Image (cartoon, rainbow, N blue to C red; front, side):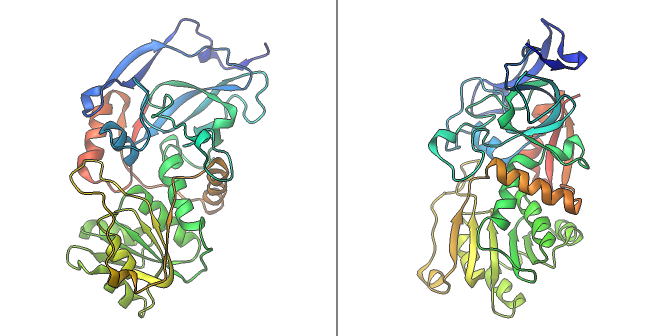
Length: 358
């Protein structure tokens, strides 16, 4: 077999550090392990990746708390999002070479078109994920990352980045000057703000923090509404748009906020509904819209579930062309993985929480 490698992947019998989700419901269930490295000679279409950084997402909290729609494999390596360097490739690999910088796709088997039942595998859920030093991937399961991004920035893209990209460009095309509404300061909302500004749109954002309001404006938000001071923020959005409403609403806070999002929508607006459950289970997940609000608009509610490899690659082209940089809140070391989860779950970060794997 003609396998191309770099030196560090040739250590037969070597071990690597990983974490495994061995018990659901509590952070103690995420257990550090020393385990054998993947083979230094990948199968013909596989690539061996040295992971350098991973990022946390809401779905990781849902999986941990048994609230995700897909059941996780017992003892799975957590996390879907990780960036690393290709250190070995199988003899039939054509998409990558040793030294390439890659991330795994959120849905590794979903390459284009619509999502189908046979594409439902996910890293960190049904397949071992990225919270490990090395991972073997089929070449079709990975995507190149933009050259200008650091490892930490590249690790933010597969889930939050692609979700935001599809929220902004996946429906009826937006035109420059139209209004996009983003809710809160989660990573999807921040990416959506950046992508909307990239397209020349006006962005209205919501938050309860004056400090975060300032950061949103620095990122490009044209208006920021404090939803605590203004609980009827749907009407506030209409006032800021001369009564027209928002052309696109990236609804990341639902289901509790869906009523106000409907009231904020333009007559033929789009509401991209992402969140339909609460990671902690403290809030009900029933979607309720009053007849008055529903009757006030002809807006379309659209559901998405991240996106496919073609979506990811299109997003990367846009990120490269505009030299966009993802927002990172804090970076933790690999040994501090539990602290990273705790910080992500408890602190309401502004941007991505990263674990660096040195």
